[in-house]
Amino acid sequence: MDVGLLIDGKSEAAQSRRSFDRCNPVTGKVAFTAAAAGREDVDRAVRSASRAFETWSLTGPSERRTILLRAADLMEERTSDFVETGIQETGATGAWLGFNVGFAAKILREAAAMTTQIQGEVIPSDKPGPLAMALREPVGVLVGMAPWNAPVILGVRAVAMPIACGNAVILKASERCPRLHRMIGDVLLDAGLPAGVLNIITHSVEDAPEIVSALIEHPETKRINFTGSTRVGRIIAEQAGRHLKPCLLELGGKAPLIVLDDADIDAAVNAAAFGAFLNQGQICMSTERIIVDEAVADEFVIKFTAKARDLPAGIPTDPVVLGSVVDAETITRVRDLIDDAVASGARLTCGGAPETGTIMPATILDRVTPEMNAFSAESFGPIVCVIRARDAEHALELANATEYGLSSAVFSADVGKALNLAKRMQAGICHINGPTVADEAQMPFGGVKASGYGRFGGRAGVDAFTELRWITIEDPHQHYPF
Picture (cartoon, rainbow, N blue to C red):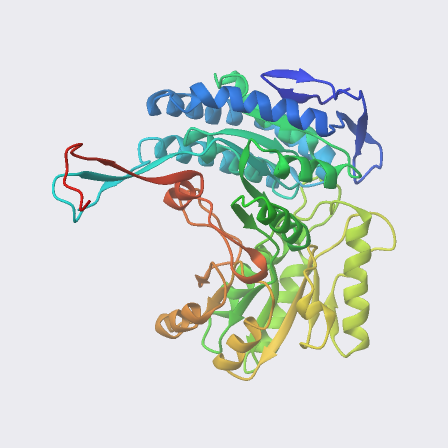
C-alpha cells in the first residue's frame, strides 16, 4: 500500500485492512493504492486529535509560527515530488501543480504570521469596576475536507489557519488525490508538528458518505470546513446543522466576466483565456460566462477564439497549457452542454469534446442564452460561454442570473462605472479589470448564495477557527439588588 492513514503521527492501515486504487486519468493505470478508512478509523483519528489539542492549544505563538514557517520551506523543497504525484493522480499540468505548491507555502507563512494576531479587546462595562474582555480562543478538534482540483492549495488551506489558532485538525483527503493530501501531513510532521495535531483520513469513493457523516457526528469534532461541490456542501450543512456545528463552505461557481463597450478588448481577452482555461477550467473561480456588450461582442469573439485556438493541449507531462481533465465523466458532461447549446442556436467557435480520452482543447460557445443549460450549469471543464448584453445594466442582470456567487469580474475603462457594477454583483469576490481566478492568502475568500458562506484567509480565517468568549474580572463583594 502506497498511502496510509496518518493517525497520531504514524502511517496506519485501515483497521479493516481495506484499500482502494487511484488511477491515472490519462493512462488508466493504477497510480497509487491508499488505505480505505471506516468509522472506526475516524474515531481513532478524532481521539488522537482530542488528546493533542490539550497541549497544542496551550503552545505559544512563537512555537506554532516556527513550525509553520519550517513547513513552508520544506514544502517548497519538495515541489518536484508534489508535481510528479499530482500529475499521476489528477492529470493536471506541472505548471499548475508547481503553482499549487508555491501558493500553499504562502498560506502556511500567512498562518504563521497570524499566530500573534489572534486578538481580543477590553470592552467598557456599565457595572462599576469590572474588567470585561472579549477573547478569541481555539475551538478544539476541527474537520477540514479538501478537493482534488487545487489539491495542495486547498489541502493546506483546510488545516493551516486552524492549526495556527491552536486547534487540532482531521483532514479528509480527496479520494482522487489521496497521496498528495497525505504528503501535506508528512511535511508538517517533518517540520515538528506534534503527533495528533493533524490526522489525515483517506477513503474510497463508495465510503465517502459514511466517512463524512462519521466526522460530522463525532461528539468531539466542533467545526467543519469544506471546499467542493454545492451538491455535497448542502449535505454537509444539513448534517452539521442537526448537530449544531458551524460550517465554513466554499462551493461551486459560475463566474461571470463582464466586458463593457469601453473595455480594452485585448486585455479582456487575455483575462478571459486565463480565467476560463487555467487547470482545464477546473477551478471554483473559473470564468464560465463572458457577458459582452453587443457593440463589441463580434470583435471580442474573433480575438478570443484566436487566442483559445493557440493554447496547446495534450499530455500533462508535455509543455502544454491544458492537460487532462480529472475523469471521462467531465468530458461527457461538457459534451452534453455543447450539444444542448448548439441545438438551441449557440455557435461553437473552437474546440469541442473529444470522442475518446480526457484531453480536451479550449472550447468556446458563442451566443449562449439563459434558456440553455450551458448558461446555468457549472461545467468544471475547459469550456466557456459568451453571452451578448444590450448594455451595462443588462450585463449585470445576466451576471446575477445564477444560483452561484463566488467570483466575478468587470472590464471597463471607466473605473467608477465598473465599481458601481461590482458593488451590485451578487458574488463574494469581484475584480475590476482582472481575471475571475485570483487568490491571496491574506484575503477574505468565499462566496454567497449557492457558493457557500464563511471566509478563509487573514483575519476572517482567524474568526472562523476561533471561539469568541466574554470573560470578566469583578469585585466579589459587589452590590446586588436582593
